[in-house]
Length: 378
Image (cartoon, rainbow, N blue to C red; front, side, top):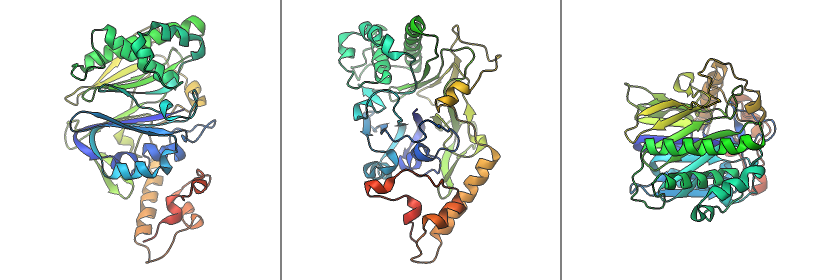
């Protein structure tokens, strides 16, 4: 399973404050998730991607097949790059080989796209999907994932609606993007139902650099979709080393996050998006929520099972009190490291008990690096 994160702000933020510094950032989740556990594939080590827009509204995408936590270039890039709209994605492959072409986000023109989930029996509907595409969008597909095919389908849908995805002068809006995502979901749903009743999980995210649409959707009336949360506020800031929170000075939505699982351990920061719902973020930073009213919409009156999403490692929760306590102690531990005596080096045995880092961590050593808690020196 994969994870994604979206940031949109009225002001730019340094990418490191979004991707690498927070204790539960998407990069740290890729090897040490506290809120979304996957017993099949607990590490998102099959590549990553970061997409962001420059001040000239040009999309820039950086992808790599190395684990996100172990990429020096990502670390350097994130400390010197600012943007007001960022897409981040970490991958644990379920379809497709390990390659940069299979990493998200995908981009074309001024559009970017990500997917969290999977299409059931994709091999049985792939030909039908491809036959539906105009040649120019079929030829854009470079990888082997269902996600990239869905992006091509999304582009094809926009084109058939009268909006040229290739022309960077094309004016989209949250309404146009919303309509295209809903049509994309409907096509995939109908093709899947022709071959299987096993649910597909379709958490899509798309942007034109100004507006954003994000879906939380499953082709089931009894199961929960892959988890999705959002947070809004006036300011996202670091209140202890490695610990961030959302500040709300008023009702403004100056900072907006949408993520597969919460990026902080503050319970009050995050709201869960209901299953089979679409979120739109306008170019004015207004967040709107729309139910996807098809045969799988239940009006919120049916209690859904989280078993399917959990079995696929796609269900994360809102932080509980014990998570906040752990986060607070982690912050204190990290602070004590920084104030330790000169030259004292913290080893794994010293630091692990005090900050709650799991003993089974990714094998960074085999790639010539070590976890931060083995190398912190004042």
